[in-house]
Image (cartoon, rainbow, N blue to C red):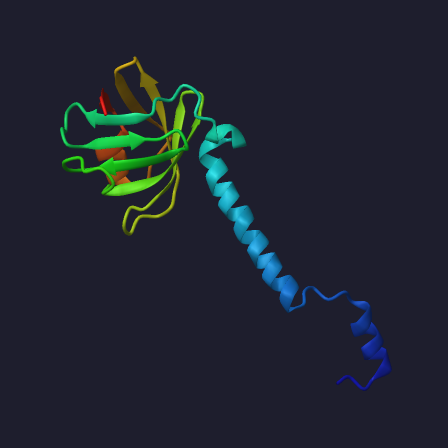
Length: 156
């Protein structure tokens, strides 16, 4: 307890930064802001979740048979590195589309950082091809799943 009235008056006149609840709220808000910034970094806007003309369904890699992507209309993807077994993907995550840009925003790659990566996609009605835009720090995602990879639509 401060006994000197002048010190007490000076201390009381300075606004307190945070009480316990405010500190928790500030940390939570900062976490939400950081997560939003990460998501938007790959997309550039909230339009990233608009799926537009991006095709959905099952696609098999034309060079690596057995490597299969399944994209749904809600922005989820499922990747199979061996024979396709419905419901048992090797990797799954969330993607977003803005025009001809596809951004993998989250994933469950074991031990890999949650860093978005953006690829330009083209689809001719049968073949879906990805080309890296910028950088992708996750080599397996870049080299095996996306960059310069072409997938053929497979009938369900």
